[in-house]
Length: 251
Ligand code: FPP
Image 1 (cartoon, rainbow, N blue to C red):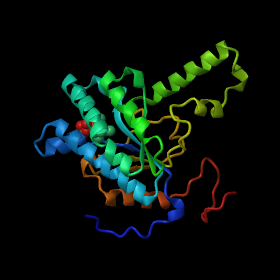
Image 2: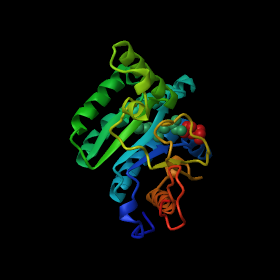
Image 3: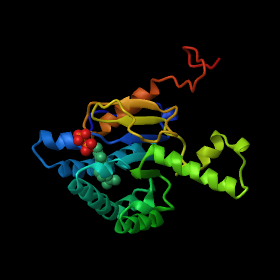
């Protein structure tokens, strides 16, 4: 149940793309005396609500950090459980996401994922490809440094094939070689559970993102929390390295 009417948000300044580090599932579970995987299960439900709430606010894309390239180092049982949960969710929520106008895509080293998960995601991509209300980009086996390494390899290949020259390498070229160049850079990066770290998430794309860190643990993240994050975003003056007067006018 929401407590607010949310009417004081400026419809002209809704973040187009929100990136989210869904932290605190383990802490949520241990505080309740439950297994860590129960925290992740509740985290998946929270993500489902988050996407629909974001769409209601007018957000056009979400990138959610579901499994990092470093998460393989967690205990094997947790890794197995997370992979199983992500596959379950990708199957169980497909019809719901189709109905709600959500397009599903992923970021990360896809070919390293278990084959059954790749198959399920491929079905999700295909069956939601015409949805336009909001994009849900699930970062799975994702690492920001890996993404830059993968883009660098593509540039090396282009040079070897005579399709690029060292002199022509610029930000525009690198941006075009990231996993989803069609997405605008995130306007807002939300991290839950109070941690003040970027944790190898979207290193290239978040260069000018506004940060919002909340103490709320991810499974408890509600529509009110999302409203607070957007409200805080709307109170910021985005400078992109320029000088901006108090009025918000650029010099
Ligand atoms: C971080 O919390 C959370 C993760 C590494 C997993 C995120 C996964 C989900 C929210 C669920 C599955 C996602 C989809 C797409 C269905 P943590 O375990 O590090 O928490 P802690 O710091 O409290 O231990």
